[in-house]
Image (cartoon, rainbow, N blue to C red):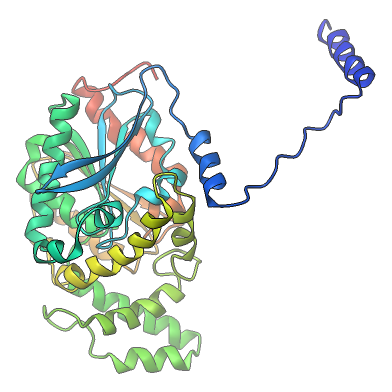
Length: 376
């Protein structure tokens, strides 16, 4: 009852002063600089013990870029290993990651040959180093640096797509460094995944009576036979139609929305964005064909907890096949979480469920080890 007179008094004062009751309309951003400044200010870390860093780290003998963000630097560290090769996650993290930062210190890393790291190095000198072995070594070195930098015995590693190969190798080689490994769009048997993706795409094309898609897919058959590296032109033709039918992003035709979101990244300059696409092509040319010969399904035992976040509609990297592999793996603790409205971009397609899964299923492992802030 006491609030009503106060409200009326405020309303009367506004009327007498000629003030408008409506909120004035904010001017639209005129360019990318203004738009990214808005995004940066909205997600700025202002908590008392927060951390917000964007910097180069010397890894593998070259400068490599990381973004480190979190509401409390005492929280468990979570390193995300992006996909591709070369498809950086840092420039879209403004969209999917902000909630994670309340519960983890989140590290986005532009790998060798990708994103801001590509922009900071000479591609001619990088080219001979673009090998799977060097990428795994970089990943191990990055985890070691983070453990030292934050005084942590263990951290979390989340690998998405190509990053799931790197992450699983870290889990196999240094399980004592990890609270758990989280695979998203997990690679298992890559050649078989490619074959299943082709078959699913052909089925969609036939159902759609899409003569052009059927002809294109038939032209690259037999597809992904044996373990011979795929010709990239055949791979790109398969992906063109797989993406068209929602095998990468459920109920969308490809990843155009994610690609466009790069332009709103506060971490990226205009030059960085241009370099990101060059780095994506550069990384694919050096790593992709070889990556698609991988058979990770021979890994049957891990010494660290294992979580898989799988999109039910992922045919870009077969989630069905990853689930079959998961069933065969022995680990101290393991859980598979299905994302029923996602394909390959789980963190973008179902960001809320991704956050809940990380907080409710994954983070308690660190809490049990005494790592983190508990008065959430």
